[in-house]
Image 1 (tube, rainbow, N blue to C red):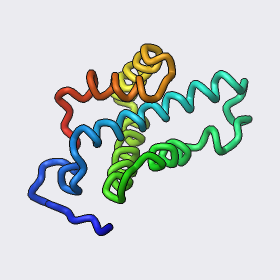
Image 2 (image 1 turned 135 degrees about the horizontal axis):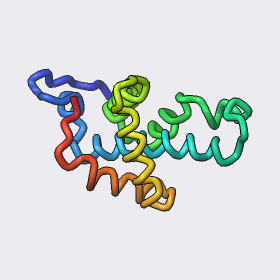
Image 3 (image 1 turned 120 degrees about the vertical axis):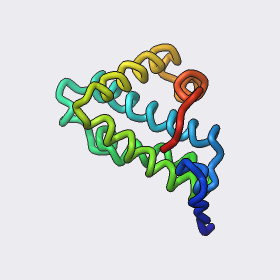
Length: 132
């Protein structure tokens, strides 16, 4: 499938034809995979570098999200969103702390279940979210 860009749209998801709800779900899945990976490594290993690459590398997060993508536009959006979130998480401006606090709270509230986490994320964090 060839992705048709509509540059008149104001968000990346709209520009590549991914509905806002689906885009928010993709972002929620990325957030879940990030926090789930951190908790799994923390719970299973005293030293995070002892964990196998398949459990601790950033590419695993993206791979797990892409498995659920229905088409190339969703895959592209997942890569875009992951890169955007990863950049935000590496900045030292307090934004990363706020994101981690939010997703940690959602992780606890969802009992570490992906579907429940994504539902919470979409309902609470994405109410007035802009994708760009």
